[in-house]
Image 1: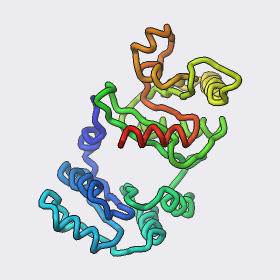
Image 2: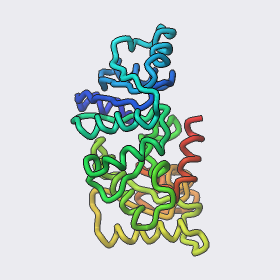
Image 3: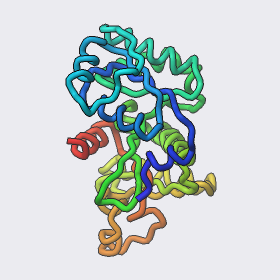
Image 4: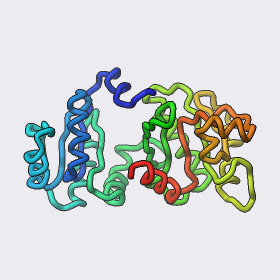
Length: 256
């Protein structure tokens, strides 16, 4: 399996990690791990007393020398974090205890500085012992019920990200409940229309197929059992969910 950390180590570019609301022990352990691998230089924005309490009480956290900006108001925390990311090069924004709404609101105020795409979208990256490679899912956090046009732009954003992490021809699976078009299932109709759009525009640096159910997007045995002929099925790099609810459920199930 290709690990994202391995790719970043090979790139040999240390990023400045801007953390919005870092008052969480598991998050601090993740930061600590990234520092040990020499991937990031963190700057944490949040309640300094709480953050230092976590650091001081745990001997495995070697974070005593990191920079912390003391701020308790969640909205101000997000504003500071996004201001730094929008004004400095080589930065990564990391969401801590700040809500998605607070982060996105701050991002939208700086959209012109940060985004050169047609839509702002979210992508989750997964490493699973049950899948043979890194894979992504979009959009499970920002776009609530995207239209066909919006899903096309979400795919373009996700593909651009995968190109940047070294995947030359990512395989995109547009998910639905089934792998055939059913007029009563809107996501299957959307998926077919999106597939046709990319076929007509002759993309060469990524592959798209849909509708595909989750099992035949990621499981080769399911593909064989259902006799599906597809260059994407069973080997997807990117999963495009129908809307935010299904994507969010999958992410939370995977984590918790």
